[in-house]
Length: 387
Image 1 (cartoon, rainbow, N blue to C red):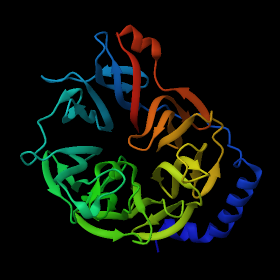
Image 2 (cartoon, rainbow, N blue to C red):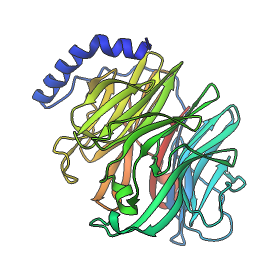
Image 3 (cartoon, rainbow, N blue to C red):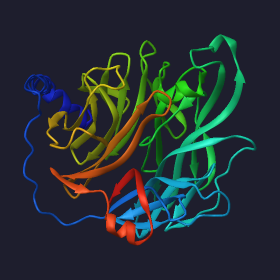
Image 4 (cartoon, rainbow, N blue to C red):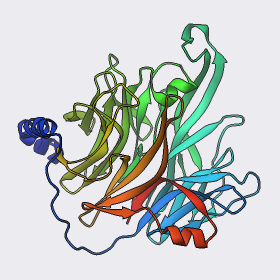
């Protein structure tokens, strides 16, 4: 039996009691004081506005801005993901309508794609010098009357695709979707997570108001699926040793579930959790996200949460901030917490600003003076990588 599954099965009764007590008290267990440890490099991917008023792709290393190279064409650009491997730093993002990969600030050759097939990238991973990105590629876009919804009948069918060093490999099953945090590589095996379903409109795909079925692929083949009776989606995956962990959001029941090696392991939260993220480190599993206690209300208050091995940890941060990503390095726990500026059905959460939570201490996302001195302002951040 997996070390994670044995641990969670052993503590499951205590976890249910702890969650009930925390809910009744209105707060989680207190956070232990952080210990002094060696510093780590924290990379952020996002964008900032230059003196000409153009939004340009940007990386930050330990708070200092590092603009990325832009090719000819549209100036509007942003970095959506970052990954550091050895001495190299990779970023994934877009320039205008074109999706690009950067290595050490310079654009790499374009990704392989079929003519007139639009695609969107969501996740980046580097392993043994190989660069992987995952995204959705459009297969068809035609009016289909029987799928008409409140959003209309303009239907888009997509398939999830993994690119390895620029070469595309579609995953098994059509009508798929994936999101940030959906890609993990270990021992040469490539894992991708997301959801599968019938045809849906573009807007429904964005807010997942239709029924997805949680899915994970291993080396392109469908490995597990959720329950078709519920709308479920795998929001984040990570691994440690031989174990691969997946966070499954059940928007029908308002639950967040942890799966280990394609088997349901435990319930993390009995409330819906927005933008959940998982990180495995040794025998420990960290989960972060923003609980929505009044689900399915989009405007209901959200509570920033961190769980370690299923037990809630108090963050002590302003309620404006929602955890977007969790990472662990050398025993230090980092959360990328972004401020929600607006919530919409069509575009989802619109973010602005934020903080980094480290071992109970809140830090600024970046050096604002450094950004200003370099001629930039209005920074937006999407993803974090800690090395």
